[in-house]
Length: 289
Image (cartoon, rainbow, N blue to C red; front, top):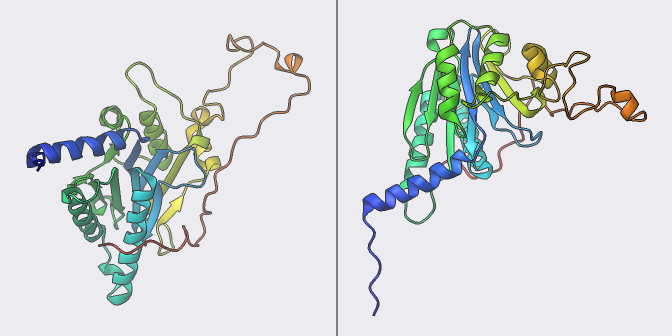
């Protein structure tokens, strides 16, 4: 009879943590920044169908990085939990802290279980308050740890470099345009040289406390984001090049090179309008364990 292999609990937890971290690092970064009127969420996401930033409840938003099917199940479960609590008690009883605690319990139980692999996800849960001092941002890791962030935070991909750039350039009381420009610059920041990310490759949303509607969540369209970013929001990810300074791999006279070429239109993302309306499809996944 063969003897089963023995693996110490410490080694088992280390292997599971390494597995989850590698999966999360392959995702594109998500950054969250507090500005004067609320909280801004920005992520590099060229997909127009799969959202990494979504609404949970009136004043609560959700952002995630990692495996889409895993964090989408968590998002739907959070919507159901918030809906049930708000209907059973009062809408004011639905808080970001309570939702973060529920997510922490679920992620911690999955990570500690030996019967299934850990979730390869990290999550932001943001709640906008009556004033900037009342805003709350919670970051949840794959093993259920909860961190209370202030001012700014980033996760996934090159999160350390994004956080380092935000630490150097962030200041309280930013306008929405300033916060958007700072966040996009940080997402493209790299020690070897900054990368310009076009607006069409970004997903952005805000929790705006100044909205008259009860729901404070609003997606930012590509056109609005391009206006806020200025030259950084160019379709090709580059600012306009003046005559005589064309890139080396393109002819100086584009019309002469391709007389029948038609100007390409930037890809558009299906986003919500600033008006009220459901943000995502109704939940279809099982409720939170």
